[in-house]
Image (cartoon, rainbow, N blue to C red; front, side, top):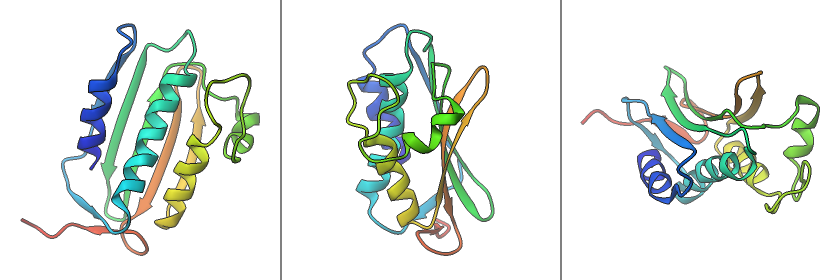
Length: 149
């Protein structure tokens, strides 16, 4: 499913000044739940990076990794990001951190989808990168490892 999100996002990239890359895990995991909502959450994070990255934005990256007990989906960008003091406000429905063309629903939808699968959403900011991380447990609600093929 993330490969589909990756392909669609690559096709939709219209800004030649922003580079997009993806590093998707090789090990398959099967999502148990609504695949459309999983893809929506992932797309929301990518679209937010483009929409809110600001003038500094030069690179957006989708990363997915699997460990023994979780699937981690992360969207990183080198744009403006959100100040740590505003992280909680950014997760509120219809919340905007400054003037924006968005609806204020992208992060709250991603958080709600992640929580529906028993996961957690984390926001991180360093001097160089802003990241939104969705963590889905592989043992428990929402996800389980795929059967070997």
